[in-house]
Image (tube, rainbow, N blue to C red):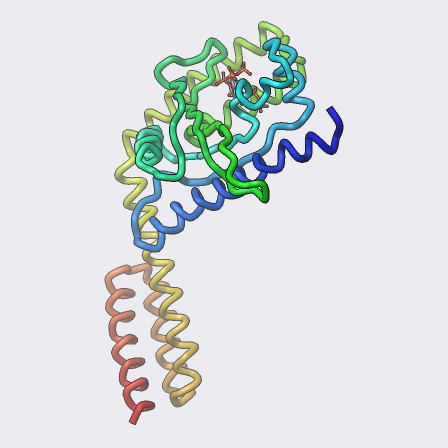
Length: 267
Ligand code: 0O2
């Protein structure tokens, strides 16, 4: 096929990958803005390379004209979660979306691959708008934890290095590493609540600090410099104590002071 034609074929897949990444990133943002825990930690995506498409066509004996129907992962999205429990939450979230239809699933968490590969895959139908009108394409969503992703990335590189013929001694070590990764995911799940609490309070603290700093910056514009410097010193003192309750109290007081200045400015 001519290069020009490949470009035309892959164009809607590029658009789909960009749109889907944006949509999943927005899910993360929406959770964070509402002070909610996001089951999605990171998202990335890629359009399969022409070489990789050709290799798959050949390996699976698929005629070129059946490419778009048979190769389901021309558009690929990877969704990374912190905990194994989050994978199901994400999968359920996707079932209810109106902009994608789930065609099939492959659960390599329940049915771990012989290689040790663990991940949850969904093939979806997704429609993009092109200059020639709407085009329904397929995309593969891989949902996995950070630990699963770490293992899969390393194993994928080794597959590439050894051209799919990984020597037995390396396979053995990969199997052991896969077991360790499995155990790590379970260990992390058992302290999930504690980790989530710690992450939430750290995010809350950073939001409060950002708010206080913005408030102090605004006070410099409308109030006596010496007064604001005193407020600033008090903030630094409280901040160094790492006492969240004191910091929250200071934040509330600062809000009242700022409100007072705002009211004065309106008079
Ligand atoms: P890439 O380089 O990731 O784009 P097949 O290619 O026939 O094995 P199939 O039947 O289309 O795959 O679906 P499957 O098994 O769900 O695999 C789809 C993708 O999952 C693969 O894409 C890999 O990304 C990933 N995957 C599946 N099995 C393994 C594994 O054992 N190790 C690792 N590291 N990844 C795996 P591709 O096509 O390999 O290409």
